[in-house]
Image (cartoon, rainbow, N blue to C red; front, side, top):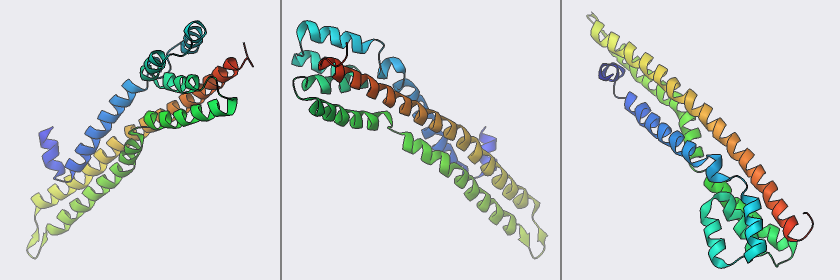
Length: 201
């Protein structure tokens, strides 16, 4: 592995740093965007049962808001349960916007890495080409410098793509997953509002 890094030259370190950051983001988002963490199953039914039995005391709302992103949205609605429907919906929408920002955390960075990794590879290719042209001397071509320039150009191009492709795949996957979760949470929040105001059983 170290021999490959040596052959790729110093530009490869930018791609290595980008790959480490991308792997960290992919792992963190995989852990944080689990459905059981974001939208615990049957949370709406449990919240409604607790509300009908005990109302919405501050301790219950605090526990609910800290439990999950969906719980945070429900807690925002329950805090305003006695208010008119538009007020509840506005509170839920505000909580939903904050939740959306949390769910999309680091995804912009992952998308940026997917975009710039081929450019970093291209940068390495340019450096390699400079090495190749530097191999030309008045007395002939230095084969060692020529070979090193070719390896820099090829390795950086290849590794830039190796980092970019998985980063883009996971970026698209997580973006789609967040969009689906946000729609699902919005539907559950609307159902909560309608049940609180007797518009749905």
